[in-house]
Length: 112
Image (tube, rainbow, N blue to C red; front, side):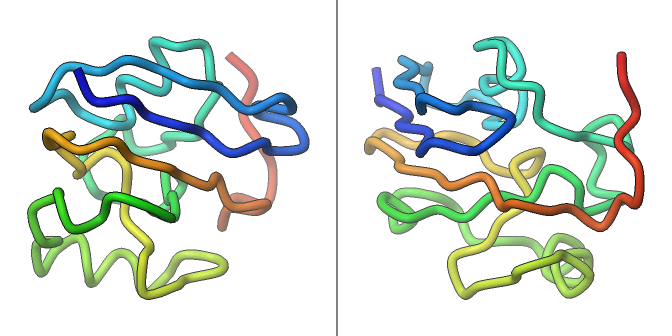
């Protein structure tokens, strides 16, 4: 099982986290299932950028972003060449290290 390392995030994951994930799993769902309150305003259908993550290590093991994902990423806060929408990432066989950006495009966070 690939290991997903989530780097510390001030509010979403202050201590960071290590998660074992099944190859082929959806990254956003894995993060949510692990108790990380990742924003996902569109319900994980690639219609917003609130689930934006930065893949610090392991990006080469992932399929390339689709044109739709690339178009949506243009709207993300803090976009980098390693940015992905976690709702569109299917976990590969390699470990991943991800960073959760400090901000999203949402002006207010919806509480569950």
